[in-house]
Length: 262
Image 1 (tube, helix red, strand yellow):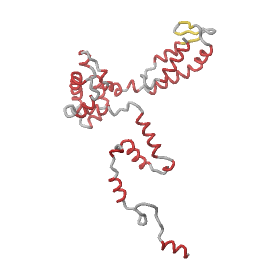
Image 2 (cartoon, one colour; image 1 turned 60 degrees about the vertical axis):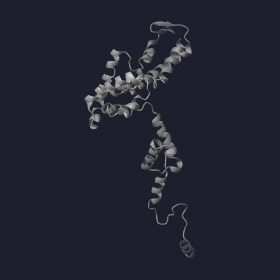
Image 3 (cartoon, one colour; image 1 turned 135 degrees about the vertical axis):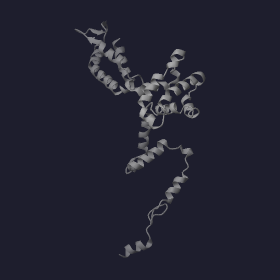
Image 4 (spheres, one colour; image 1 turned 180 degrees about the vertical axis):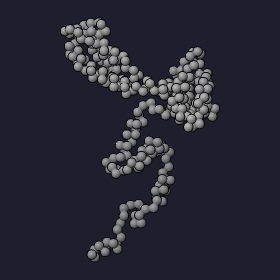
């Protein structure tokens, strides 16, 4: 029992990144274990029997560290629970939409209202009618529920085929789809920087690195890239008078003869 409890708390700590940031359960487990007189161990007012002494000592020794880590993670991801924008992102999960008529009629209205208030300045700057967003959301929600709820490309269809009819709501969805769902994009950026700025290219300036990173990350696929415009621009750029179009430079015989005569 004691060993399972220890592994449960330690295992839940490592899974906080992919699970909900609410760690009240783990903190409750840690707070429910106490040691009274002697070696009697209590868990939620229940005495535990056959407790391994070494496991008990390890648990007591590491419990403060686990509590600190759990509280640190809770503070770090507190915005995921309190930020209005993160609460409203739930509407993007179409398979989680309710199927019953009473719940379906009102589903997402409060989330869309939160999102509109959160991005109000940005939406108004782009000419979006705030009052029309909720109306268009309900129209699109009913269309999806009756026709294409099982289609995995619901939001792609909104931003392409139905954008002209639902322009205001489509603009809000575009903003939501910009939220990264993982740090994979950031990790790919670091990997690209390591490939580009090597020890042999340590003198690259920030502007050049930025351009190369954008080409590597956001540029077209190698099979679709036509290098001829870039090559033509490179060879048409003015160069030093004594520089050959390609290959290493060779010193003229007259300059070499002058040095030898001297």
